[in-house]
Length: 91
Image (cartoon, rainbow, N blue to C red; front, side, top):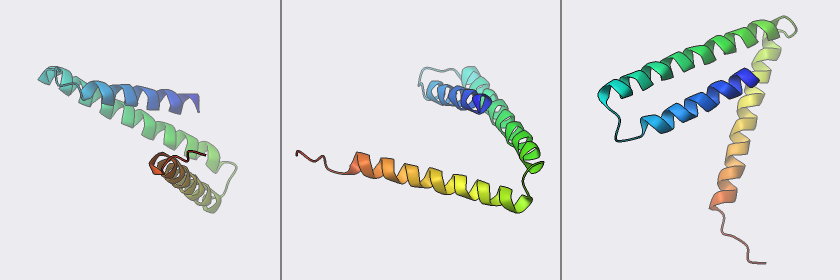
C-alpha cells in the first residue's frame, strides 16, 4: 500500500504542476511523459497485486473484492460530497 500511496501522491503533485500557466511546452511535454510513466507504474503494481492475490483467492473472490472496493469508494465519495454540500446546522 505504501507504493500505491507514493504513486498517487506523485501523480497528484504532477497534476498540480501541470496546471500552471507559466510552463513551457517542453515542461508540459515532460510532465505528460512523467504522468504516463506514473500510470504505467500504477498498472504494473495492480498487476503485481492481482498475481499475489490470485494465489490465495479465487478469480470470483477477486472480482467480488474489486467490486466491493469500488462500491466502498463510491459510498465514501457520496458521503463526503453530501457533507460538504449540506447546509450547516447552527444548533
